[in-house]
Image (cartoon, rainbow, N blue to C red; front, side, top):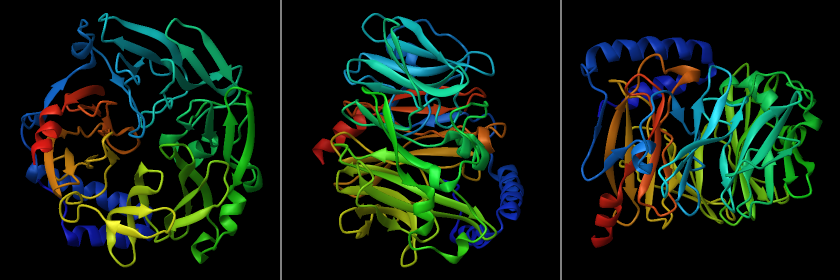
Length: 429
């Protein structure tokens, strides 16, 4: 693996306070390294016994060319019974069809269309109980979410969603227009009347939604977050929240509070009860990136601590104590998008491009402490920066498959990887 070394990571960290210079140095350095390490004609390599399929092959349907992707790593394209897959299929530059693949019939159909999406998180497409889908869209110049059944019946809700409660009747959301101003690749650029990019901090933050009664309430404000254990680096900064995730039972949720100002970017990680009660600061050493729940009490996060640096940490959200996970194994190539297998034995994560512009896919066996390479995928330069194509690995409900997005052949597409031979082989260890 052509990963970046300790000295290079230290230089990158030292430039945190100068993000513009950091971006420039990073871009030039990456291109120089690519000239030295690139592999001619390389697209991808998958290590046995894993197998790679397109969704069309998985469903037994006729292959159709063109961009197809899912989105973020905290949701999955499979329905809970694994009979269906749902993806975004580009329909011009300004719309994405919601395409559904049926394993039983081999049919591929379009059940809806969204005009608010981004290539990092899609339209926040996710399955609800009863094989229904929910996703964000625009209606009458308002950001909304739509609940769609597979026969085309729709319900329009008066706000977008970020994460849906496991029970399917509640959700949490945030202001995607503020995100569009401060981090465009996660926001929605279309003008709307029900959200504004410059809402006062006392009127912006996290909303709790009742999907059945179509009721909402602001439960955590950015103003409140700014006032909790304030740091001097907050002076003159802009603040936002992002990456809200319910715990497996929905009794808690976690989120990131991030601010950007004269001294660069800072992130905090918070946890609280389902209605915003018991707000607790978990991490506050400048950098928090990606995270995922193991159970209601434990969270895995790529983050920084003053004592141990940049690592994968498993945090007890009740006590705030943490342990390092996979030191020297899972973290060899740095930050990624981690998640636990349904049985919680395995962790999957990906990496950002190495010196050869290759993204790596790794499985980590929590029982043995070993990491297992699943594959590596070329990342073309045109898929860099805000339009990047991260693998964003996602588990299937039965734990035998992974879903990834990749552009290794020059087009943003989605793929399924059969890892049953890896995870079942681990059962014999």
